[in-house]
Structure formats: structure tokens, C-alpha cells
Image (cartoon, rainbow, N blue to C red):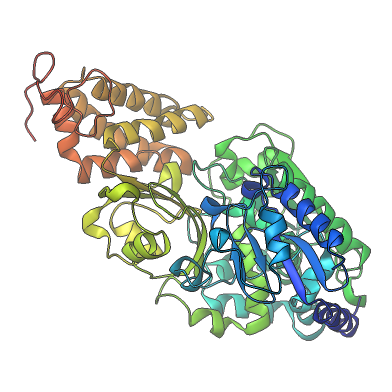
Length: 566
């Protein structure tokens, strides 16, 4: 398919859409599907048929609309109506009322204002098609401008010019480390092929507790990721790519398979794309669900069919990666940013965000917050604004206690930093990280030593065991945290826990062990009094730890108090 043919197809699709008076969108991403949104869609289609409105009304399954807490979500694109908690016909009359009211007043009891800050204050680049296109129909993606960036790059830009635009954009890897994407692409482009090969890998091994950004992008807009990978492959000189995705993401896998097949059928993947000399083939690799496989070298080992263990670096994958060939690895969100950057130019993207953190970031907003779901915000938005405006604040008038960013490798940010801008540098300055974008809000009912124990339990379970500091150190740290939350720890245990934070961080082989102490270190730094209460007073102020005294109920210390100097 040539660029002119692509534009002609897009125009044809747009004309078809103008002939439909009411296009009703139903979220068919995983969260809403778990609430039977597929049956909601079927109910709406049946109602439209029963009313004889097939010629002017169309029901379309779309990707994630963001506000998972209110799902299943249904929208009418013609009049901007948005409905929440819609149930299929066998439960109530929701779908009947929605169809019956198409030309009259909206169904008030189901209405959700699209003017809420949750929707209005987002800046959508990665998620610009989510909730709008059918992820299983490539024509929908093309209608939204899809593949124009790829064909423009192939026919009008040299590979070096593509890299220049990515560099100019200031895009940094969205998988967690924030490494400059343009610099990584440039390194792979300069590297000599090994046996004539270079590779591109999309890291879709999203394993952070509370994180679902990459899964949602793959479920909602898979063609966007394929296009980003193809542009990257052209820029660095690769002809083969892999998407490493967890087997526990069946919907994402299904839609990726459909997307790859459709793109190949249209000549947008495969041999001689757009009648050029560039060829690019993408394959899926399913991971068994090991957190360590999110680390680049462990992921490469897994793709090669080996056990997913990391190896020392250098050599870096950009120089010697998959089957010893130069390999470009970026995560799902990074690739999803590529097509808009090529379409609009690097300077456009660089104008969004902060001086060193450009563009937007997708977050999975979870925990003790009213509006849980998926958001995309410009870098630099204050954390308080994210939680209280977009997130709708803490339910039940409870008090904010901490925000945990970056998954199990991140840190817990206390209330005093709520006005901090959310960007790479600010998060690092308080001991946390951006990570892949998990953002868990905690209120006064959370016990911070118990939170640290939870994340350490995850890390020691997910450690591959290759290096001793991670294999033994994380287990030892978990045991100490268990003693603290059980009221059995001594001051010496606390001192040992702090020393282990340094040892594990500074001597582990890969990022899992190096960052595993973060939740412990930040809770020790910002919530030390809670540790002291557990050890000295045998008291859990949040009332979480069993067997310990609770303020206002059983405030008498249990057992012999420990002597603490802090």
C-alpha cells in the first residue's frame, strides 16, 4: 500500500462515518469486559435492530475509555453523552433506555459528565485513539491517521532524519529507567549487524502490582505499537521484531495477532512495505510471567528460549543483544509515542512537559482514590492535582498518607511532597522512580511497614536467584519486616534492615535487586515513627498488624517494650 492509497482509504472511512447519525461506543477493554461489556454491546445492537435504526445507528466496541471505576462505559459520539455502570438487558433496562433516548433527553441515572477533570485535564497522545477506534479493525486506525507516519518516514525521510526527530522530541524510555530514546536508537543504528541481523523488541512484560498501562494500550490500540516498532526498525536498520507479552494478557495477545495479520495483509508489515526496499516482520513471544523478564537482558534470554536470567552489562543490548546482534528494546508506551512524533515533529512533542521530562506519561491510578483507571497527563503536573482533581480525592473523607510510584521498585511519597511535579527528576529526588507508571494512593488505613513488607514479599518471590545479594538479601529483609509487623523486632533488627537496604541496592546484578529496597528505604525515611511504634510500643497506628495495639481501641503496648534510639 502506498501513501496515496493509505490516504484514500482513510478518506473513504471518514465518509462512511459521516453517514451514521449515532455511533455508540462500548468499552471492550479487559476491565469493562469483566463487567460484561460484551453483553452490553450485544444488548445495544439488539435494541437498535428492534427499533429499526440500523441505518442511522451503529454500535462499536472500542478500547479503554479510562475511568475503570465506573465501567462498563458507553458513549454516544454524536452528542457527547457518556454513560456509566451500564448493565446488559438481562439485568435491567439500561440498554433499552439508552436506545430509546437517542433523540430525546439523556438517561439521567446513568449519565457521567465528560466535563469532569478526570477527562478534561488529560493530555492524550499515547491514548488518543483509546475509546474511539475498534482495536480489531485496521481501517479504524487508518481513519485516525494510522500508518501515515510510517509511510511518510519510508518515502520521504532518511533513517538518520527519523532518529533526529526522536532525539529532538526528548522522548525518554517509558519502561522505568528514562534513558533517552533517541540516543538508544542512534547507538543501535551505528552498531554493525551480526550475521547481517539487527532486531527490535517491544517489552510488554508488565508485572508491577497495580499497573495495567501497557496491557491497556495493547488491548486498545495495537496497530499504534506495530507502527512505532516498524518506524524504529527502519531507523536502526532492523528487519525483524518481537513483542514480548505476558501469557496472562489473553485479550492483548488476541488483538495483537489480529493486528499483525491485518497489517501484513495490507502490506504495512512484511516484505517491501509501501513498495520500498524496507521489509519488517513482527512475531509474538509469550512470557510465563516472571517480573525479572522486564529487565532487558533477562527478556532477551527468554526470547532466545532460555531461562529468563539477567547477565552483567556491558555489553549492552544495543551493541550485543538478541542472538548476539544489536538489539533495540523499548517498552509498549515508548513505541506508542513514536508515530505522533514523526507525524507532528520532535519540536511539537518537546514543547509538552518539563525541561528534562518531555511529553506525557500514562499512569494506572489505583488504590484509595475515587477515580481509579488509566490517565495520561503532561509531565510536570503536581501530584496533588493528579490525586485530588483527576483522581477525585480520597473516599470516605479519609486523609492522604502516601503515594507509591514505580511499582515494587518505587518509593512511597508522603504528604509533604504532594505539590511536587510528577517528572523523572522530582520523583528521584524523593527516593522514588517513574517506573512504568503505576501510581497507588494510600490513606490513613495503610500501615507503612506492612506496605514495605508487601512489596518486599513480591521482590523476593520474583528474584531469579542468580546473584546472592538479591536472592538472600531480599528474603532476609522480608523476614525482618515480618518481625516488625508482628511486634517481635528489636532495635538491632531495624539497624540491620537499614544496612541491608544499602547492600542489596549496591551489590545486586540487575535492576530488580538494585531497586527492591526503595519501598523500605522511603518508608523508613518518611514514616520512621511507625517503625518505632511497632518495635518499641508494639502498636500499629493504622490498625492493620494483627496482635498489636490500635490507637483509641487497645492502646496498651503488648509485650515488653524494646529500647529504641532513633
